[in-house]
Length: 224
Image: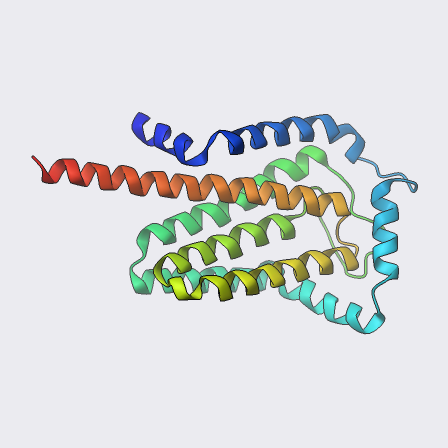
């Protein structure tokens, strides 16, 4: 277990660990100011300017994107990916994806949102419930789509660029649709993306460390 943790820290790297610590300090420091957003805040101004520059035709399309990126549709995608991994017997990938997607839901919905307890923007174009900070859409999309891309590309290298380009465009659309529907403040999206990136990095580093540790154990056993 100790060797696995050491390998995990080695794969993760010092810069990423420092980034995580700085992000945690920033969240703790910013917590009081995030509870209430004044009308003159940067979040208010950025959100209003952004929405004003979106044509109505594009706005309708963005609302559809936001609905598609919700829990039900994303849940179907997650289950489909898990079924694909099980069919191909990619058991390690399956476990990592379950841990990654389940973990980010717990981190955002059960820990961070209740802790910050930040209201959503007023005048939402959709009927929404729950708290605002950080954005579960932003965090979840980063973890699920880029984790899936990384794992599939490891088995099918030729698909790497198409998968990452398509996923990047889709994730960007999800973020834009989240802002347009007034489901989140801009800082919610940034924080959600940062939290998602950190969790994604931790999961993939742990996955790599586990593979290396397992390979090393197998090699030692074969030499006995």
